[in-house]
Length: 223
Image (cartoon, rainbow, N blue to C red; front, top):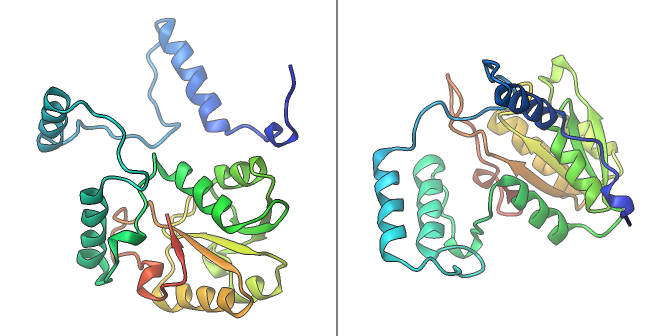
């Protein structure tokens, strides 16, 4: 069987663990799942009822390419409510999960062979998606002193065309405050480096809220 070179990426090991756990369950073993972060509760009743109504009364054909307009408008309102950001719904694109958002952003922003900086340690699929798209993931080694986030100095010195930041971060859980996030965005702008902000963990915090990159600049890309 023919295989492309871009298919030669290291596995996302958590999914291998999940597969092994499912296989053990199928053989009758009782498994406590700690391999992936998944909901432990049902969807809210209002969401269940909305889906039931849609299935019963709507043929459910294709939506417009960028996503349902009313959903995009709702997301824009959420950014106004959460962050005080005035976001044009025309800038909002709905994707089938964040991984599809990364693929869309990477292919829109970068040409084959270009380099994208990611903090290490970081979410493994960043690296795998970049490699699969024939892009070069550049690990930026972080430290506890910098709360396991890249620093503006590292960004300024790195030969990269893009920087991907997660705040709250996976796996460290650390967040960048407005000043630290702004310094990274400024360092990227100074060298014409695209700034991509992974904000899928916003809302999963305890003492203070996370800061959106869109609070600081319009010239950013938010997943």
